[in-house]
Length: 201
Image 1 (tube, rainbow, N blue to C red):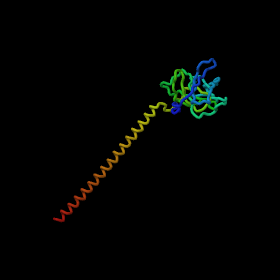
Image 2 (cartoon, rainbow, N blue to C red):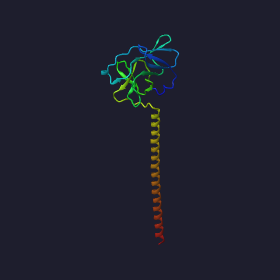
Image 3 (cartoon, rainbow, N blue to C red):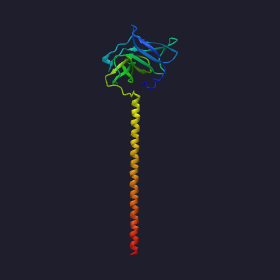
Image 4 (spheres, one colour):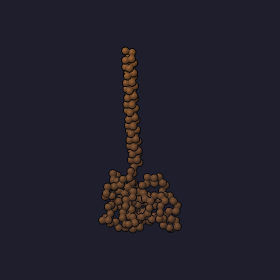
C-alpha cells in the first residue's frame, strides 16, 4: 500500500498529546474542505489479546469539514506518521496498525518510511492507529521500487533463457530432421545406383 500515494500533494496536520508534545503528523491530500484532525486519548492496548507489540503511542484520527461534519470515508489514502523509537532499517516486522471493529489490532502497511522520530504509513480509513511490531515475522509487501525492478529483470532474464532454450530445441530438431532426410535420400540414390548397375551387368 501507499506506492501510488506518495506523489499526491498533501496538507500536514500536527498531532500533539495532552501536554502539547508532538506525537504525530497526518498528511491529507490537499482539500480545502478538510480543516482539522483530532487525536483524543488513546485506548488501552492489551498485549494478551494481540500478536503484536506496541512500539508507539496510539492516536485516534478524525477528519472534519469546514462545516464541522465528520468525514467517515476517504476517497484517497492519507499518510499517518507516529512518533516511535523503533527504526525501519533492516526491520520488515514494523507496520502501521489499526484497531478494527472487533477490537483487534491489524497490521495494514508494512511499507513504512521514517522521518526524524516518526514512522509513516498509509491508510484508506479512519480509526485508532499505532506502530506495531509483528511478532509473527513481518510483512510480504515489496516496498522498495528497486525490488520491483529486480523482479522485472529476473522475469525478463527467465523469459529470455526460456526463449533461447526453445530456439535451441527447434534447431536441434530441424538439424536432426534434415540429416534423416539427407540419409534417406542417399539410401534411395545408392539403391537406385545399385539397381542400375545390376541391370547393366
